[in-house]
Image 1 (cartoon, rainbow, N blue to C red):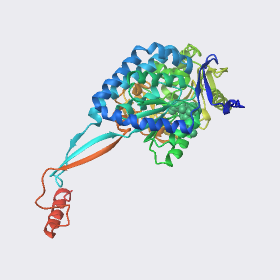
Image 2: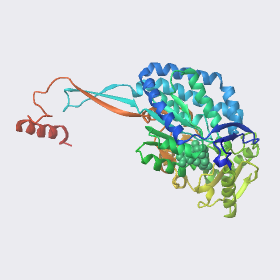
Image 3: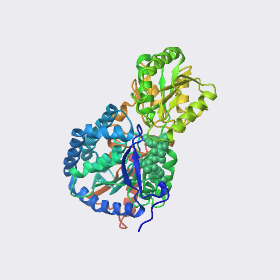
Image 4: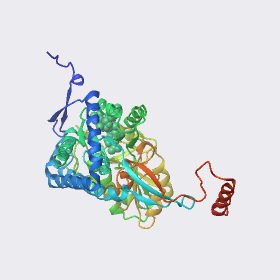
Length: 491
Ligand code: NDP
Protein backbone atom coordinates (compact mmCIF):
# COMPACT_ATOMS: atom_id res chain seq x y z
CA UNK A 1 0.00 0.00 0.00
CA UNK A 2 1.35 3.45 -0.87
CA UNK A 3 0.85 6.31 1.53
CA UNK A 4 -0.70 9.51 0.23
CA UNK A 5 1.71 12.42 -0.03
CA UNK A 6 1.30 14.95 2.76
CA UNK A 7 1.63 18.07 0.61
CA UNK A 8 1.38 18.91 -3.05
CA UNK A 9 5.14 19.34 -3.11
CA UNK A 10 5.56 15.67 -2.13
CA UNK A 11 3.07 14.42 -4.72
CA UNK A 12 4.47 12.42 -7.63
CA UNK A 13 2.36 14.47 -10.04
CA UNK A 14 1.61 18.14 -10.68
CA UNK A 15 -1.20 20.00 -12.40
CA UNK A 16 -1.02 22.59 -15.09
CA UNK A 17 -3.79 25.17 -14.85
CA UNK A 18 -5.45 27.73 -17.08
CA UNK A 19 -4.23 31.15 -15.92
CA UNK A 20 -7.54 32.74 -16.97
CA UNK A 21 -9.83 30.43 -14.98
CA UNK A 22 -7.68 28.40 -12.61
CA UNK A 23 -9.14 25.20 -14.17
CA UNK A 24 -6.84 22.20 -14.41
CA UNK A 25 -5.60 21.54 -17.95
CA UNK A 26 -3.96 18.20 -17.18
CA UNK A 27 -1.92 16.28 -14.61
CA UNK A 28 1.64 15.22 -15.33
CA UNK A 29 4.24 13.08 -13.56
CA UNK A 30 7.15 14.74 -11.79
CA UNK A 31 9.80 12.70 -13.49
CA UNK A 32 12.65 11.55 -11.33
CA UNK A 33 16.39 11.39 -11.89
CA UNK A 34 16.00 7.72 -12.94
CA UNK A 35 13.30 8.63 -15.45
CA UNK A 36 15.55 11.35 -16.87
CA UNK A 37 18.51 9.01 -17.23
CA UNK A 38 16.34 6.37 -18.90
CA UNK A 39 15.04 8.95 -21.38
CA UNK A 40 18.57 10.08 -22.21
CA UNK A 41 19.66 6.45 -22.69
CA UNK A 42 16.77 5.89 -25.13
CA UNK A 43 17.70 9.13 -26.89
CA UNK A 44 21.26 7.88 -27.44
CA UNK A 45 20.12 5.01 -29.64
CA UNK A 46 17.60 7.22 -31.39
CA UNK A 47 20.29 9.83 -32.06
CA UNK A 48 22.38 7.31 -34.00
CA UNK A 49 19.38 6.27 -36.07
CA UNK A 50 18.42 9.91 -36.74
CA UNK A 51 21.98 10.89 -37.65
CA UNK A 52 22.26 7.93 -40.04
CA UNK A 53 19.07 8.96 -41.86
CA UNK A 54 21.16 11.69 -43.47
CA UNK A 55 20.11 15.16 -44.57
CA UNK A 56 17.35 14.08 -46.93
CA UNK A 57 15.82 11.54 -44.55
CA UNK A 58 15.67 14.14 -41.79
CA UNK A 59 14.43 16.92 -44.07
CA UNK A 60 11.50 14.81 -45.29
CA UNK A 61 10.46 14.01 -41.72
CA UNK A 62 10.89 17.56 -40.43
CA UNK A 63 8.82 18.78 -43.37
CA UNK A 64 6.08 16.33 -42.40
CA UNK A 65 6.17 17.64 -38.83
CA UNK A 66 5.99 21.20 -40.11
CA UNK A 67 3.02 20.27 -42.31
CA UNK A 68 1.23 18.64 -39.42
CA UNK A 69 1.75 21.70 -37.20
CA UNK A 70 0.55 24.00 -39.99
CA UNK A 71 -2.62 21.91 -40.54
CA UNK A 72 -3.38 21.56 -36.82
CA UNK A 73 -2.55 25.13 -35.86
CA UNK A 74 -6.12 25.82 -34.64
CA UNK A 75 -5.95 22.84 -32.24
CA UNK A 76 -2.52 23.79 -30.91
CA UNK A 77 -3.45 27.48 -30.70
CA UNK A 78 -6.50 26.57 -28.59
CA UNK A 79 -4.26 24.66 -26.20
CA UNK A 80 -1.73 27.52 -26.01
CA UNK A 81 -4.62 29.89 -25.31
CA UNK A 82 -5.81 27.66 -22.47
CA UNK A 83 -2.55 26.73 -20.83
CA UNK A 84 -0.54 29.92 -21.34
CA UNK A 85 -3.44 32.39 -21.34
CA UNK A 86 -2.56 34.41 -24.45
CA UNK A 87 -5.26 35.35 -26.98
CA UNK A 88 -5.95 32.80 -29.72
CA UNK A 89 -4.70 35.12 -32.47
CA UNK A 90 -1.37 35.61 -30.68
CA UNK A 91 -1.07 31.85 -30.18
CA UNK A 92 -1.59 31.38 -33.90
CA UNK A 93 1.08 33.99 -34.72
CA UNK A 94 3.52 32.25 -32.39
CA UNK A 95 2.89 28.86 -34.01
CA UNK A 96 3.19 30.31 -37.52
CA UNK A 97 6.65 31.69 -36.72
CA UNK A 98 7.71 28.38 -35.18
CA UNK A 99 6.61 26.47 -38.30
CA UNK A 100 8.72 28.82 -40.42
CA UNK A 101 11.76 28.01 -38.28
CA UNK A 102 11.26 24.25 -38.76
CA UNK A 103 11.07 24.81 -42.52
CA UNK A 104 14.18 27.00 -42.62
CA UNK A 105 16.32 24.79 -40.42
CA UNK A 106 15.42 21.61 -42.33
CA UNK A 107 16.10 23.24 -45.69
CA UNK A 108 19.33 24.99 -44.74
CA UNK A 109 21.01 22.35 -42.58
CA UNK A 110 22.76 20.51 -45.47
CA UNK A 111 24.41 23.55 -46.99
CA UNK A 112 25.29 25.10 -43.62
CA UNK A 113 26.63 21.97 -41.98
CA UNK A 114 27.44 19.53 -44.73
CA UNK A 115 30.97 18.67 -45.84
CA UNK A 116 32.81 21.29 -47.84
CA UNK A 117 36.32 21.67 -49.15
CA UNK A 118 38.24 24.63 -47.73
CA UNK A 119 41.53 26.13 -49.00
CA UNK A 120 44.54 24.33 -47.56
CA UNK A 121 47.05 27.17 -48.04
CA UNK A 122 50.47 27.29 -49.66
CA UNK A 123 52.33 25.49 -46.88
CA UNK A 124 49.91 22.55 -46.97
CA UNK A 125 49.17 22.66 -50.70
CA UNK A 126 49.56 18.90 -50.94
CA UNK A 127 46.61 18.37 -48.57
CA UNK A 128 42.91 18.48 -49.26
CA UNK A 129 41.08 20.16 -46.39
CA UNK A 130 37.49 19.26 -45.49
CA UNK A 131 35.17 20.77 -42.94
CA UNK A 132 31.83 19.48 -41.75
CA UNK A 133 29.61 20.06 -38.73
CA UNK A 134 28.59 16.84 -37.03
CA UNK A 135 25.68 16.44 -34.61
CA UNK A 136 26.48 16.44 -30.90
CA UNK A 137 24.24 13.45 -30.11
CA UNK A 138 21.57 14.18 -27.49
CA UNK A 139 20.48 17.74 -26.75
CA UNK A 140 18.49 18.60 -23.62
CA UNK A 141 16.09 21.51 -24.12
CA UNK A 142 14.70 23.28 -21.05
CA UNK A 143 11.94 25.57 -22.19
CA UNK A 144 9.99 28.50 -20.82
CA UNK A 145 6.25 29.14 -20.61
CA UNK A 146 5.98 32.61 -22.18
CA UNK A 147 6.27 31.45 -25.82
CA UNK A 148 5.84 27.74 -25.17
CA UNK A 149 5.96 26.82 -28.88
CA UNK A 150 8.14 29.44 -30.54
CA UNK A 151 10.93 29.70 -27.97
CA UNK A 152 11.81 26.03 -27.40
CA UNK A 153 11.41 25.47 -31.15
CA UNK A 154 14.39 27.77 -31.70
CA UNK A 155 16.49 25.05 -30.07
CA UNK A 156 14.45 21.93 -30.91
CA UNK A 157 14.08 22.46 -34.67
CA UNK A 158 17.70 23.50 -35.15
CA UNK A 159 19.05 20.67 -32.98
CA UNK A 160 16.95 18.10 -34.86
CA UNK A 161 17.84 19.51 -38.29
CA UNK A 162 21.51 19.31 -37.31
CA UNK A 163 21.04 15.57 -36.64
CA UNK A 164 20.59 15.38 -32.85
CA UNK A 165 17.97 13.67 -30.72
CA UNK A 166 16.17 15.97 -28.29
CA UNK A 167 14.95 15.48 -24.74
CA UNK A 168 12.56 18.33 -24.00
CA UNK A 169 11.58 19.51 -20.52
CA UNK A 170 8.92 22.22 -20.90
CA UNK A 171 8.11 24.61 -18.08
CA UNK A 172 5.85 23.24 -15.36
CA UNK A 173 3.38 25.95 -16.46
CA UNK A 174 3.08 24.65 -20.04
CA UNK A 175 3.66 20.87 -20.05
CA UNK A 176 0.54 20.06 -22.10
CA UNK A 177 1.84 22.22 -24.96
CA UNK A 178 5.21 20.46 -24.75
CA UNK A 179 3.46 17.08 -24.84
CA UNK A 180 1.43 18.13 -27.87
CA UNK A 181 4.59 19.04 -29.79
CA UNK A 182 6.36 15.80 -28.86
CA UNK A 183 3.30 13.66 -29.70
CA UNK A 184 2.98 15.40 -33.07
CA UNK A 185 6.63 14.65 -33.81
CA UNK A 186 6.12 10.98 -32.84
CA UNK A 187 3.28 10.79 -35.37
CA UNK A 188 5.63 11.65 -38.23
CA UNK A 189 8.69 9.88 -36.77
CA UNK A 190 7.20 6.77 -35.14
CA UNK A 191 10.31 4.61 -35.58
CA UNK A 192 12.51 5.93 -32.75
CA UNK A 193 12.14 8.30 -29.76
CA UNK A 194 14.07 11.07 -31.48
CA UNK A 195 12.21 13.71 -29.51
CA UNK A 196 11.08 12.89 -25.98
CA UNK A 197 9.18 14.73 -23.30
CA UNK A 198 10.15 15.08 -19.66
CA UNK A 199 7.70 16.64 -17.25
CA UNK A 200 8.25 17.89 -13.75
CA UNK A 201 9.38 20.90 -11.77
CA UNK A 202 12.80 22.50 -11.51
CA UNK A 203 14.29 19.26 -10.08
CA UNK A 204 13.53 17.40 -13.30
CA UNK A 205 15.30 20.12 -15.30
CA UNK A 206 18.24 19.95 -12.90
CA UNK A 207 18.42 16.15 -13.36
CA UNK A 208 18.54 16.65 -17.13
CA UNK A 209 21.58 18.91 -16.66
CA UNK A 210 23.38 16.08 -14.85
CA UNK A 211 22.22 13.25 -17.13
CA UNK A 212 25.17 13.32 -19.50
CA UNK A 213 23.49 14.93 -22.50
CA UNK A 214 25.81 16.51 -25.07
CA UNK A 215 24.41 20.02 -24.67
CA UNK A 216 21.76 21.84 -22.68
CA UNK A 217 19.78 24.59 -24.40
CA UNK A 218 18.20 26.61 -21.62
CA UNK A 219 15.67 29.44 -21.85
CA UNK A 220 14.55 31.19 -18.70
CA UNK A 221 15.76 33.57 -16.05
CA UNK A 222 19.39 34.51 -15.35
CA UNK A 223 19.33 33.12 -11.76
CA UNK A 224 18.12 29.71 -12.96
CA UNK A 225 20.56 29.93 -15.87
CA UNK A 226 23.41 30.21 -13.35
CA UNK A 227 22.16 27.08 -11.55
CA UNK A 228 21.93 25.23 -14.85
CA UNK A 229 25.49 26.20 -15.75
CA UNK A 230 26.77 25.14 -12.34
CA UNK A 231 25.08 21.74 -12.68
CA UNK A 232 26.40 21.32 -16.24
CA UNK A 233 29.91 22.22 -15.09
CA UNK A 234 30.06 18.94 -13.12
CA UNK A 235 30.00 16.94 -16.35
CA UNK A 236 31.49 19.64 -18.64
CA UNK A 237 28.20 19.65 -20.51
CA UNK A 238 28.16 22.68 -22.82
CA UNK A 239 25.28 25.11 -22.46
CA UNK A 240 23.34 27.56 -24.57
CA UNK A 241 21.79 30.31 -22.48
CA UNK A 242 18.78 32.29 -23.69
CA UNK A 243 17.98 34.45 -20.68
CA UNK A 244 15.98 37.54 -19.94
CA UNK A 245 16.33 41.10 -21.11
CA UNK A 246 15.63 44.71 -20.28
CA UNK A 247 15.31 45.83 -23.85
CA UNK A 248 15.27 49.50 -24.75
CA UNK A 249 13.72 51.35 -27.65
CA UNK A 250 15.20 54.62 -28.87
CA UNK A 251 13.00 57.22 -30.54
CA UNK A 252 15.20 59.76 -32.28
CA UNK A 253 14.20 63.29 -33.26
CA UNK A 254 13.55 62.31 -36.89
CA UNK A 255 11.42 59.27 -36.04
CA UNK A 256 7.93 58.59 -37.36
CA UNK A 257 6.42 59.18 -33.93
CA UNK A 258 3.12 57.50 -34.74
CA UNK A 259 4.91 54.30 -35.84
CA UNK A 260 7.22 54.49 -32.82
CA UNK A 261 4.26 54.71 -30.43
CA UNK A 262 2.57 51.76 -32.16
CA UNK A 263 5.81 49.77 -31.95
CA UNK A 264 6.45 50.62 -28.31
CA UNK A 265 2.95 49.58 -27.36
CA UNK A 266 3.17 46.21 -29.11
CA UNK A 267 6.77 45.64 -27.99
CA UNK A 268 5.91 46.42 -24.39
CA UNK A 269 2.40 45.08 -23.89
CA UNK A 270 1.88 42.14 -26.25
CA UNK A 271 1.85 38.77 -24.51
CA UNK A 272 1.21 40.81 -21.33
CA UNK A 273 4.84 41.95 -21.52
CA UNK A 274 6.05 38.39 -20.90
CA UNK A 275 8.51 38.51 -23.76
CA UNK A 276 12.25 38.21 -23.30
CA UNK A 277 12.72 40.50 -26.33
CA UNK A 278 9.86 42.78 -25.26
CA UNK A 279 10.45 46.52 -24.91
CA UNK A 280 10.61 47.58 -21.25
CA UNK A 281 12.30 51.01 -21.52
CA UNK A 282 11.84 53.78 -24.08
CA UNK A 283 14.30 56.67 -24.48
CA UNK A 284 12.81 59.52 -26.49
CA UNK A 285 14.52 62.58 -27.96
CA UNK A 286 13.29 65.71 -26.18
CA UNK A 287 12.08 67.23 -29.46
CA UNK A 288 9.49 64.47 -29.96
CA UNK A 289 8.99 63.37 -26.35
CA UNK A 290 5.67 65.13 -25.72
CA UNK A 291 4.10 64.01 -28.94
CA UNK A 292 5.35 60.43 -28.44
CA UNK A 293 4.02 60.22 -24.89
CA UNK A 294 0.66 61.60 -25.96
CA UNK A 295 0.29 59.12 -28.83
CA UNK A 296 1.51 56.19 -26.74
CA UNK A 297 -0.87 57.01 -23.90
CA UNK A 298 -3.83 57.37 -26.27
CA UNK A 299 -3.06 54.04 -27.86
CA UNK A 300 -2.46 52.33 -24.51
CA UNK A 301 -5.89 53.43 -23.30
CA UNK A 302 -7.45 51.49 -26.18
CA UNK A 303 -5.70 48.27 -25.19
CA UNK A 304 -7.88 46.01 -23.05
CA UNK A 305 -6.04 43.88 -20.55
CA UNK A 306 -7.46 40.36 -20.52
CA UNK A 307 -8.54 40.69 -24.18
CA UNK A 308 -5.76 42.37 -26.18
CA UNK A 309 -3.42 40.26 -24.09
CA UNK A 310 -4.03 37.60 -21.48
CA UNK A 311 -3.47 37.33 -17.75
CA UNK A 312 -0.01 36.84 -16.26
CA UNK A 313 0.83 33.17 -16.77
CA UNK A 314 2.95 32.56 -13.71
CA UNK A 315 1.26 33.47 -10.40
CA UNK A 316 4.47 34.71 -8.71
CA UNK A 317 5.17 37.17 -11.50
CA UNK A 318 2.27 39.40 -10.48
CA UNK A 319 4.14 40.34 -7.29
CA UNK A 320 7.27 41.25 -9.28
CA UNK A 321 5.25 43.56 -11.55
CA UNK A 322 3.45 45.11 -8.59
CA UNK A 323 6.77 45.71 -6.80
CA UNK A 324 8.32 47.38 -9.87
CA UNK A 325 5.36 49.72 -10.38
CA UNK A 326 5.20 50.62 -6.67
CA UNK A 327 8.94 51.30 -6.56
CA UNK A 328 8.73 53.55 -9.64
CA UNK A 329 5.83 55.53 -8.17
CA UNK A 330 7.50 55.85 -4.77
CA UNK A 331 10.59 57.34 -6.42
CA UNK A 332 8.68 60.12 -8.22
CA UNK A 333 7.45 58.25 -11.29
CA UNK A 334 3.93 58.74 -12.65
CA UNK A 335 1.63 56.18 -14.28
CA UNK A 336 -0.03 57.91 -17.24
CA UNK A 337 -2.13 54.82 -17.86
CA UNK A 338 -2.64 51.62 -15.91
CA UNK A 339 -0.61 50.93 -12.82
CA UNK A 340 -3.40 48.75 -11.49
CA UNK A 341 -3.60 44.98 -11.14
CA UNK A 342 -6.77 42.94 -10.67
CA UNK A 343 -6.06 39.32 -9.80
CA UNK A 344 -3.55 38.24 -12.41
CA UNK A 345 -4.58 40.83 -15.01
CA UNK A 346 -2.28 43.85 -15.25
CA UNK A 347 -3.51 47.02 -16.97
CA UNK A 348 -1.25 48.44 -19.71
CA UNK A 349 1.02 50.74 -17.75
CA UNK A 350 2.96 53.71 -19.13
CA UNK A 351 5.36 55.13 -16.55
CA UNK A 352 7.18 58.47 -16.91
CA UNK A 353 9.66 60.37 -14.72
CA UNK A 354 11.01 57.10 -13.40
CA UNK A 355 14.58 57.42 -12.04
CA UNK A 356 17.19 55.26 -13.73
CA UNK A 357 18.01 53.47 -10.46
CA UNK A 358 14.48 52.16 -9.94
CA UNK A 359 13.52 48.49 -10.31
CA UNK A 360 11.32 49.22 -13.33
CA UNK A 361 14.41 50.44 -15.20
CA UNK A 362 17.03 48.02 -13.89
CA UNK A 363 15.35 44.63 -13.47
CA UNK A 364 13.34 42.51 -15.86
CA UNK A 365 9.67 43.27 -15.13
CA UNK A 366 8.09 40.74 -17.52
CA UNK A 367 4.78 42.59 -17.42
CA UNK A 368 2.83 45.04 -19.62
CA UNK A 369 4.73 48.12 -18.45
CA UNK A 370 6.91 50.69 -20.20
CA UNK A 371 9.10 53.38 -18.72
CA UNK A 372 9.41 56.39 -21.02
CA UNK A 373 12.35 58.72 -20.45
CA UNK A 374 13.22 62.05 -22.11
CA UNK A 375 16.79 62.34 -23.45
CA UNK A 376 18.80 65.24 -24.89
CA UNK A 377 20.02 63.37 -27.96
CA UNK A 378 20.71 59.95 -29.47
CA UNK A 379 24.06 59.70 -27.65
CA UNK A 380 22.36 59.93 -24.28
CA UNK A 381 19.74 57.43 -25.45
CA UNK A 382 22.44 54.94 -26.49
CA UNK A 383 24.34 55.42 -23.21
CA UNK A 384 21.25 54.79 -21.07
CA UNK A 385 20.08 51.88 -23.24
CA UNK A 386 23.47 50.22 -22.79
CA UNK A 387 23.57 50.89 -19.05
CA UNK A 388 22.24 47.45 -18.12
CA UNK A 389 23.62 44.07 -17.18
CA UNK A 390 21.44 42.57 -19.92
CA UNK A 391 22.05 42.78 -23.66
CA UNK A 392 19.39 40.87 -25.54
CA UNK A 393 17.64 43.06 -28.10
CA UNK A 394 15.96 46.40 -28.70
CA UNK A 395 14.63 48.78 -31.32
CA UNK A 396 15.35 52.17 -32.78
CA UNK A 397 12.98 54.48 -34.61
CA UNK A 398 14.70 57.06 -36.82
CA UNK A 399 14.46 58.00 -40.49
CA UNK A 400 18.18 58.60 -41.08
CA UNK A 401 20.19 57.39 -38.07
CA UNK A 402 18.69 53.96 -37.47
CA UNK A 403 21.63 51.90 -38.69
CA UNK A 404 24.21 54.01 -36.86
CA UNK A 405 22.30 53.79 -33.57
CA UNK A 406 21.52 50.08 -34.03
CA UNK A 407 25.23 49.26 -34.35
CA UNK A 408 26.03 51.14 -31.14
CA UNK A 409 23.46 49.25 -29.08
CA UNK A 410 25.28 46.69 -26.99
CA UNK A 411 22.95 43.77 -27.61
CA UNK A 412 22.44 40.74 -29.81
CA UNK A 413 19.56 42.04 -31.94
CA UNK A 414 18.08 45.39 -32.94
CA UNK A 415 15.19 46.19 -35.25
CA UNK A 416 14.95 49.56 -36.98
CA UNK A 417 11.53 51.23 -37.38
CA UNK A 418 9.79 48.08 -36.10
CA UNK A 419 9.93 45.94 -32.98
CA UNK A 420 10.92 42.27 -32.63
CA UNK A 421 11.17 41.78 -36.43
CA UNK A 422 14.44 39.79 -36.18
CA UNK A 423 12.69 36.94 -34.32
CA UNK A 424 10.58 36.14 -37.38
CA UNK A 425 13.51 36.02 -39.81
CA UNK A 426 14.87 32.48 -39.58
CA UNK A 427 18.21 33.34 -41.20
CA UNK A 428 19.06 35.80 -38.40
CA UNK A 429 20.74 34.44 -35.27
CA UNK A 430 18.92 35.07 -31.98
CA UNK A 431 20.66 35.57 -28.64
CA UNK A 432 22.25 38.06 -26.31
CA UNK A 433 25.17 38.93 -24.07
CA UNK A 434 25.77 39.45 -20.34
CA UNK A 435 22.80 38.50 -18.17
CA UNK A 436 20.86 37.78 -21.38
CA UNK A 437 23.05 34.74 -21.96
CA UNK A 438 25.22 33.49 -24.77
CA UNK A 439 25.12 31.26 -27.80
CA UNK A 440 22.66 31.59 -30.64
CA UNK A 441 19.50 29.89 -31.84
CA UNK A 442 18.10 30.50 -35.38
CA UNK A 443 20.03 30.97 -38.58
CA UNK A 444 23.27 29.32 -39.56
CA UNK A 445 24.75 30.08 -36.13
CA UNK A 446 21.73 28.37 -34.56
CA UNK A 447 22.37 25.22 -36.59
CA UNK A 448 26.09 25.23 -35.78
CA UNK A 449 25.28 25.67 -32.08
CA UNK A 450 24.14 22.04 -32.01
CA UNK A 451 27.15 20.58 -33.80
CA UNK A 452 30.86 20.18 -33.44
CA UNK A 453 33.15 21.21 -36.24
CA UNK A 454 35.03 18.27 -37.69
CA UNK A 455 38.19 18.98 -39.70
CA UNK A 456 39.59 16.34 -42.02
CA UNK A 457 42.64 16.46 -44.28
CA UNK A 458 43.59 14.03 -47.03
CA UNK A 459 47.11 14.00 -48.45
CA UNK A 460 47.01 14.30 -52.25
CA UNK A 461 50.72 13.64 -52.85
CA UNK A 462 53.91 13.55 -50.78
CA UNK A 463 56.01 16.74 -50.80
CA UNK A 464 59.53 16.41 -52.20
CA UNK A 465 60.68 18.22 -49.05
CA UNK A 466 59.07 16.48 -46.05
CA UNK A 467 57.83 19.06 -43.51
CA UNK A 468 56.14 16.86 -40.96
CA UNK A 469 58.88 14.37 -40.46
CA UNK A 470 62.06 13.74 -38.44
CA UNK A 471 63.74 13.41 -41.85
CA UNK A 472 63.48 17.17 -42.37
CA UNK A 473 66.87 18.54 -43.38
CA UNK A 474 68.57 21.81 -42.37
CA UNK A 475 68.07 22.95 -45.98
CA UNK A 476 64.30 22.51 -45.61
CA UNK A 477 64.32 24.47 -42.33
CA UNK A 478 66.16 27.32 -44.04
CA UNK A 479 63.72 27.20 -46.95
CA UNK A 480 60.87 27.35 -44.47
CA UNK A 481 62.36 30.49 -42.86
CA UNK A 482 62.69 32.17 -46.25
CA UNK A 483 59.14 31.18 -47.22
CA UNK A 484 57.54 32.58 -44.07
CA UNK A 485 59.47 35.86 -44.53
CA UNK A 486 58.35 36.02 -48.14
CA UNK A 487 54.72 35.25 -47.35
CA UNK A 488 54.20 37.28 -44.16
CA UNK A 489 57.33 39.26 -43.32
CA UNK A 490 56.91 42.12 -45.75
CA UNK A 491 53.98 43.87 -44.06
P1 NDP B 1 12.99 29.89 -14.65
O1 NDP B 1 14.27 30.39 -15.18
O2 NDP B 1 12.91 29.57 -13.22
O3 NDP B 1 12.56 28.56 -15.45
C1 NDP B 1 12.82 28.33 -16.80
C2 NDP B 1 12.86 26.83 -17.04
O4 NDP B 1 13.89 26.23 -16.24
C3 NDP B 1 11.59 26.10 -16.66
O5 NDP B 1 11.36 25.03 -17.54
C4 NDP B 1 11.91 25.59 -15.28
O6 NDP B 1 11.14 24.49 -14.91
C5 NDP B 1 13.34 25.18 -15.42
N1 NDP B 1 14.10 25.10 -14.16
C6 NDP B 1 13.82 25.67 -12.97
N2 NDP B 1 14.78 25.39 -12.07
C7 NDP B 1 15.69 24.62 -12.71
C8 NDP B 1 16.93 24.04 -12.33
N3 NDP B 1 17.44 24.17 -11.11
N4 NDP B 1 17.61 23.33 -13.25
C9 NDP B 1 17.14 23.19 -14.51
N5 NDP B 1 15.96 23.73 -14.92
C10 NDP B 1 15.26 24.44 -14.04
O7 NDP B 1 11.91 30.89 -15.07
P2 NDP B 1 10.46 31.05 -14.52
O8 NDP B 1 9.60 30.29 -15.44
O9 NDP B 1 10.32 30.76 -13.06
O10 NDP B 1 10.31 32.63 -14.72
C11 NDP B 1 11.01 33.52 -13.85
C12 NDP B 1 11.51 34.72 -14.60
O11 NDP B 1 12.41 34.32 -15.63
C13 NDP B 1 10.47 35.49 -15.33
O12 NDP B 1 9.84 36.35 -14.49
C14 NDP B 1 11.27 36.19 -16.38
O13 NDP B 1 11.84 37.34 -15.82
C15 NDP B 1 12.35 35.20 -16.71
N6 NDP B 1 12.04 34.41 -17.90
C16 NDP B 1 12.64 34.73 -19.06
C17 NDP B 1 12.34 34.02 -20.20
C18 NDP B 1 12.95 34.34 -21.49
O14 NDP B 1 12.34 34.09 -22.53
N7 NDP B 1 14.17 34.83 -21.51
C19 NDP B 1 11.39 32.93 -20.21
C20 NDP B 1 10.85 32.64 -18.92
C21 NDP B 1 11.19 33.36 -17.83
P3 NDP B 1 9.82 24.72 -14.05
O15 NDP B 1 8.98 25.71 -14.80
O16 NDP B 1 9.25 23.38 -14.05
O17 NDP B 1 10.27 25.24 -12.71
